[in-house]
Image 1 (cartoon, one colour):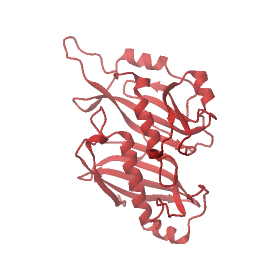
Image 2 (image 1 turned 180 degrees about the horizontal axis):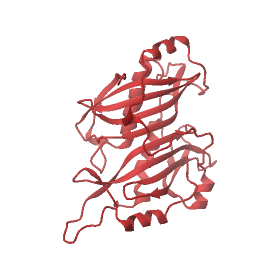
Image 3 (image 1 turned 45 degrees about the horizontal axis):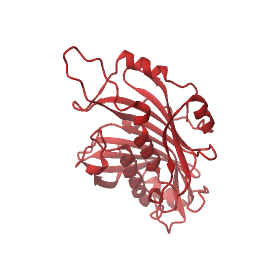
Image 4 (image 1 turned 180 degrees about the vertical axis):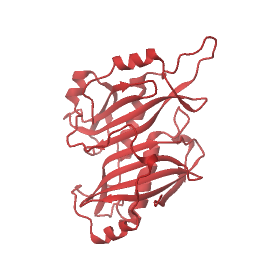
Length: 310
């Protein structure tokens, strides 16, 4: 039974859509984070993402599934709930929906209750536990992990030395800008996935592979999309700190490619974030997933890097 409650309502702007013709992943995440703020209000933390707030929620682990694309002009709204509450952390669920309530994307977050100034975890007060009791929900099948393991990550594999040694592709390099920060002065969550989206063509190339075309058939317009993502945040860079994104293929079959993206500090080599993505080829005219050819599969497998992980 769906026990989630409405926490956000909005829509899709043309400028939020990418070359694939649908809402870009960074804006999915941005809308989910605004939805999270709506959920924290119901949890008894109305100032969780305000400069005046003494306590906030820090996202440590984020699982996403993309179920139905959203195109320019679409109405979206979100519902949310609390799956579990620990001593200092919470397992939260957000579902972004189309106007008729059909799930469009799901977001499962592990977040810590922490001081806003230095991100020091501390226990939930009883008043928040009481408020959360009315928001408890279960994870529906459509939000459960399908192709990604959600086992806890105790130590990240992401580091610059490994990326350089194995030839992981550099798809992003830059410095955190002031306009990428939240009210506390840390990089906003959607900025990591946005930099991945900006640079991923360097990994895949200008066109995505599709099925073998039959003789005489016109060429298909093939793009790419992500079905499922897991992002683990290891640190939160500040304005002026440097970021480098390295990416590599782990495996491939006819329907999906498994890709890892690491955001690291090019100065220290330490990880800022790591992500696992399940990627597909997408027919831009039929708006559906397509299998890729045997030759394309072999090419992806030839580029696979052993030892990739979160």
